[in-house]
Length: 379
Image 1 (cartoon, helix red, strand yellow):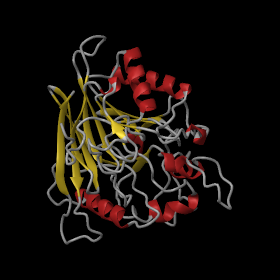
Image 2: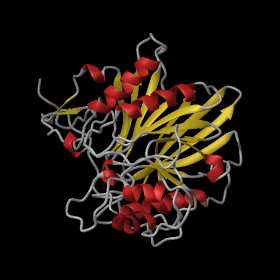
Image 3: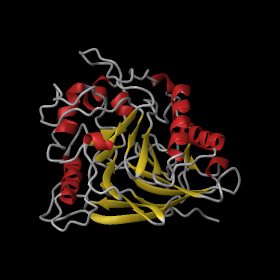
């Protein structure tokens, strides 16, 4: 039987012959707040309706070549804030999935790649670091430690003007580079997965994750549990493929605790992919289906295509991929997520909407973002 050169993978892929770059690991900075590293959204921007919450989510927005695509994405998110027909689902903030700047996390890159493009974004911006935010430029004339600039922007001890921003947006007061955002409808747990291509999570952070999952689970069904990390556990793209370290981390923690989040978001891969992970019954699984969403098409100009089944560099026949299916992907357009949470008598509903932009470097009058994919999840 001949290979179908036009068929793309519908499963996660593992990339063969990838060099080991775990030597790039960098020690995390000291926390700016107290364990267990919580930040209450109400202390930053009070939620007007305790039964509704909407926010944007996006990853991999920076670019060293051109900020054009990022500016278009930001412009469309701003339009959703400014919509004249109010629905109660206007977004309140942005949660960034990492890689705010490229190629290294230097302070000199933040004005052009973050503060200027987001100058008009009206809401607070929270973030977890990406591998590029964490990396150190070996040729830099200024000596700095990993995440020095990131922590100055996002993990300050008080909100104030950032010296290298050139903008009015003030610093954020996240208590650590891994932390939990407390909201009236969900606990949003944000991980830090370091510099190497497939990510590294320390034992200390693993124990913190277990603690946070147990704490968040105790607040169910009043609050959903959302897990975010930069490195994508599952991916079918040609640049990275799936991250075995992240799969082993998450599945090991889920198995150990018997606690599963309601949905997992990641970036790192420069496209959009929506996977479903089907668990067999047993150990608190109850045949559950857990969505894994990759949202890394937020502005970096180069997008990552999904691999073709005929490409010998990739394979998907691994036990770790059993029960994992790629339900939808978009690898030709930039875009962003709008996440909507609603509490009803039946529980909490999570709606994830993925909006794309025409792949042009200029905006037409009016709204350019189109709804590309939508997931409705009752938890």
